Length: 114
Length: 110
Image 1 (tube, rainbow over the protein chains, first blue to last red):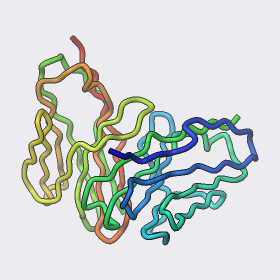
Image 2: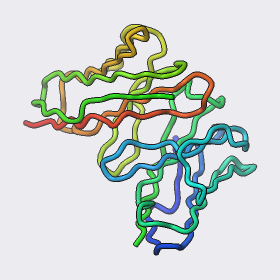
Image 3: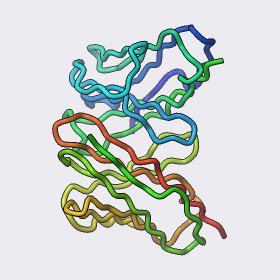
Image 4: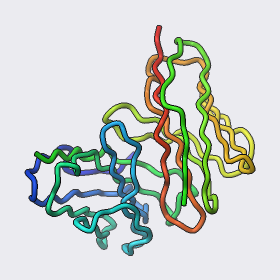
């Protein structure tokens, strides 16, 4: 079965550079969520989209932005990168715009800022 | 807001039973999820509870008490591959996010 696809799997950037992370949800899933997980930390919710509209916003820095496109894939754009942005970034998708059914996570993008 | 509390680490022997607890406080409740996460990998869905009681799924069972803001995950017949972090996450009513606890690291030894 198709899963949530994230690209790239690994990314190395220098401070003050920009990065774009992509997420392709499971077909027919209408909701995408982005999470940031630092080393030894729990996943922290960043932002979510339902039917291409932002549906909830968490602890996402102003330097980050995200959107969901007409084909339901989503991109997380990160600018003016800082060392503290180094983390695993997970995307998850679900159906029917809510967490009432199980949500599936992608394999994550490991971002290293040097 | 949501506040999730989980203990941090435990070691158990292969074949044993282990219980992982989770307490939570949330303004509105729309379900509690348990996820398994191996180091550096994505969380994998284990169970979902929205009503009080026990949900059984093979070797894994999850219990919920909404009045106590409490859940536990029971892992039976532990296998080496069960060594992982176990995260509980709560969905609050009216928002569109999962709030994760810090996870409980389970180490299974022979």
